[in-house]
Image 1 (cartoon, helix red, strand yellow):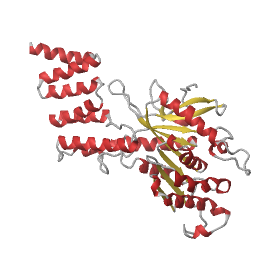
Image 2: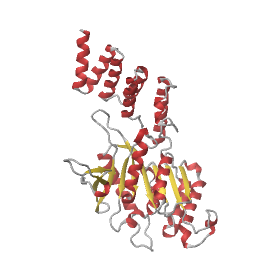
Image 3: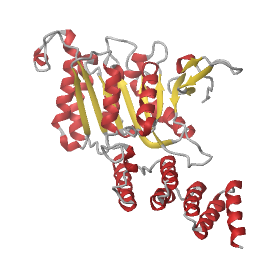
Image 4: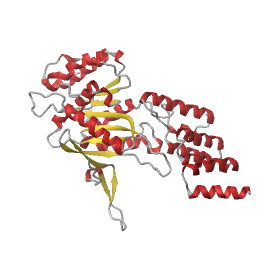
Length: 411
């Protein structure tokens, strides 16, 4: 496996500025190259990672979104997720790593179809492609990036077919599945014909699925009329509607799922809006407080004690839903600690610093923040206590200076 750190033009836009530095790129991601012994080829992968500062904060864990047809979908997803996980305090989505998997020349059908069709001799390599993802790509990403143990798989058309096949037959590989216009008609509905038995017999607890259905009907038809149509042009949407019917028949299998029909979008226009809706469904409870802007942190109608209970309850429930320990963003908690420190609201400031101490006890910075809060409140003894704790974890000259000054004043 070889990492390619070269940027390509598809992943950046040139911003022309005056000065000695010349043209400066706006970088959206990077390309790594993974050699697959299973597929017997090099596979480029496009990767976006959120920015994080490990000088002060603990190395974070991010959910990972794996996107099929990555060359078509990567850039739009990066900008959307940046907007809704970082911009202006947005927390609609969690910050996440995006892994776009572009197709290699002539191999899209081979990789994304689970069964070899007599109608297309290049098809049927889906099992090998799944094995590549499970045994080579995912371990590579987990080794080299700050991943959390929660993954989402997203695909469109044949990619959507691959998503459904993965959910049904390799259920534990991902936690969330987004199938946009899945080609369930492939090879005379062969996978569709298997869905009933699998959905009836298997348990999908902890798994989420979103299915997007576009309007690919003849003009004047609706979703009821199209069910009785027998023309080839409506085979695609009829197969997806049958998938929806099959999903509805077995609520006892614990699959959390939803679908949406897009009457004003066709097969090619639906991926952008469906990706948004699918991720909103997968991460429906990510925002804190739930269904309220993040700036609720500023609302002083809640006491610091009440706010702390809300924070703990939110992340406890998120952890239950996601299947791993989800923690508050250390940088955001630190930011609010200093915001309220500037306002001289010391109790509220210390509440946010204490959140970080409780969730990130091994980081020096959480104790330094609490020390600053006590220092601003003129509680020098407590400030010294926290500065000493910070220095016991990591030596920092700036903290040492603060501590020595307090000791000299004491003497």
